[in-house]
Amino acid sequence: MSVFNDAIASLLSPIKDLLDDEGVSEVMINGAHEIFVEKKGLVYKTDNQFPTEDALISAMRAIAQSVGRVIDNDNPRLDARLPDGSRIHVVLPPMAKNGTTVAIRKFTKEKLTLNDLIAFGSLSKSAARFLDICIHLGKNIIVSGGTGSGKTTMLNVLGSRIPKTQRLLIIEDAAELQVKAEHVVNFETRKADPTRGVEEVTIRELVISAMRLRPDRIIVGEVRGEEALDLIQVMNTGHDGSMGTVHANNPVDACTRLETLCLMGDIKIPPDAIRKMVASAMQIIVQCSRYHDGGRRTSHISEILGIDKNGNYISRDIFKWVQTGKDPETGKYIGEMIPCGYVPTFFEDIVVNKLPFPKSQFICPEWYNDLKKQAA
Ligand SMILES: Nc1ncnc2c1ncn2[C@@H]1O[C@H](COP(=O)(O)OP(=O)(O)O)[C@@H](O)[C@H]1O
Ligand SMILES: [Mg+2]
View 1 (cartoon, protein in one colour):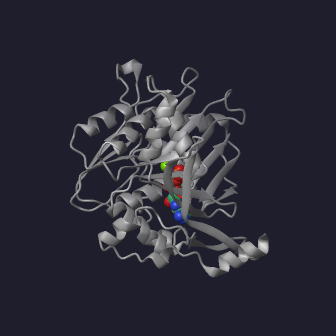
View 2 (cartoon, rainbow, N blue to C red):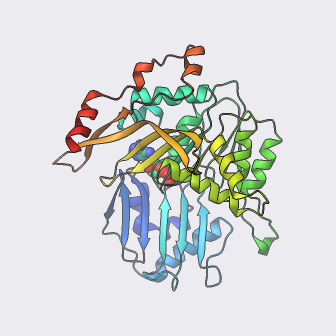
């Protein structure tokens, strides 16, 4: 096991096979005797067990120590990145009622590519080409979705399509993105550690630095705090084509979420003004969803048009994923991504720049209209 040193490896021997198994993307430990894994998007219970709660806690202590941290009664939670890039989160009893609770999200060296997403049916070829065009035209893009829905993967894919001549500044809490581009600068936040006199460096501070480092585009891995306002300002002040992810369930929700995050900071901008800023910064929302069959799919690609007279965000779906059936054997959903019959407002830019994307690609397929009629 390359991830850990020998001592940790032996403490973790009860789950060694799970850590070694490349098909396992996540290991979840709910106390010594209950261990689950995620494989290909589905969660299974395993027979693996730690002999005792103490054995499990010792392993977690050793991991904490190896990254210069402590987990004990005074510090009952640990959030750390292992040397190989895997992320681990631990909560000790009595807060964790099941016993020491751990999730290890394994770092996959091989990130999925645009072609993988197309091959998995998460994205249609046409939608992929459309996203490429949006990036080429410097549209601001927010990837929205729940935990584990594929946001980071999507952002990684999109970031790798940014034109070579541009300078990218990437800001993350834990370096996960591996954007393949020529001119990339990566920043990672730092947690405070008062015992060693280490001060925190936040996403917000790094965004402010990034702005002063002549970026063409800024990418914020995960927007979850007051840095939302900085990203919105970045997007509204000429760094077109900036990107980020946000935790939300649909494209309108993503806008609302960003607005809420903007208001978290200590700022004097009235909520109405914030809403206008968010609406004008947002151009394209890519919604990632994890379906009940375990599949991760791009459920919507939408354009945000601004706010209506009642103050609501106006969102128009350009593409969406539609389920048409279910495989009786595997339980997997059958379906495809279709255009919704809406032509984005910037179609003229596509034409003027001679980008290969004819208007016909936005036409909603006849079968879907028939399906809707039947369902009505
Ligand atoms: N479209 C997809 N199809 C299959 N697996 C995917 C897809 N997108 C992401 N994954 C996998 O799902 C897991 C979680 O993805 P991630 O992008 O980290 O989600 P999030 O950032 O939303 O938490 C990763 O193991 C990733 O490789
Ligand atoms: Mg993520």
